[in-house]
Image 1: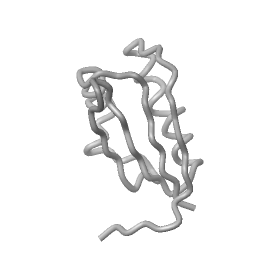
Image 2: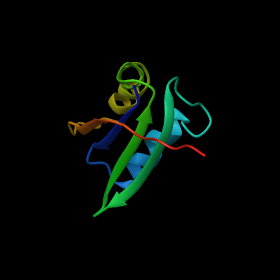
Image 3: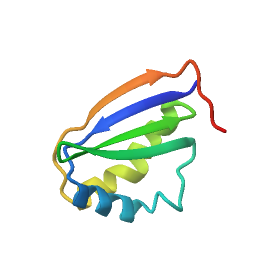
Image 4: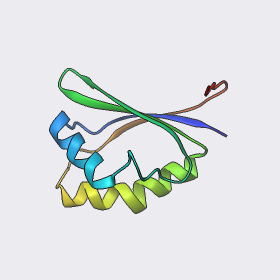
Length: 91
């Protein structure tokens, strides 16, 4: 199963960049992550991720992301939409 997650934590670009730097996600790819992308929409960073499974996404959230979010005192509850992908091309 491959899932797509669209996430909004209410972060501005500066906060997103701090999270990204602390995770070092550009070089340290979490197990099961196929794709991670982000875009600023009306001053808020939106994240799209594709994972091999929901279990990998959950593990990333709990083991890697949660400590960073807590360290940066990000209190916004994330809005997360999850979709099972039926078709995915990765050239």
